[in-house]
Length: 165
Image (cartoon, rainbow, N blue to C red):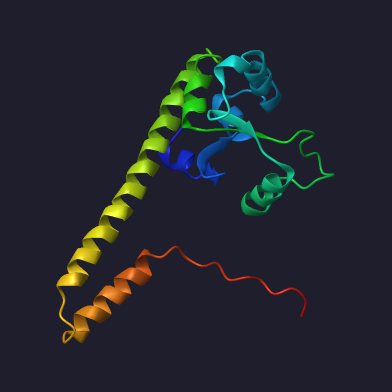
């Protein structure tokens, strides 16, 4: 699996970067039910900071973000489990197929690339602050450039769709 495909499957829940059990099962080539079955048989390997179950509210938010199946259309019977980077690494100890090993390597690389991208973003912000501090108040053109760069660094705001006519 390509690393870029893995990166879009990483979500932030409760301040942790996690992956859904269903996404991991698809990557590993097993049914979600079987993946969760192996995890539950080996619960001592998955403490709360490696894996946790989503609340109903968190699940609803994720459904609206990633457009998963609607309730009543086949969906899930249980709330999904999510795995942190450490939990994904631990999955390799319960899933032993060659495909699971290769998938685990791709997932670890995806987490690392995401961490590097976030680190680079923070470094750029710090450097921009230092440069901005050097600019004198009289140089309006440079201040405009810094303002434009700051706007580009902000996450995009998705327009809200209006309900009704």
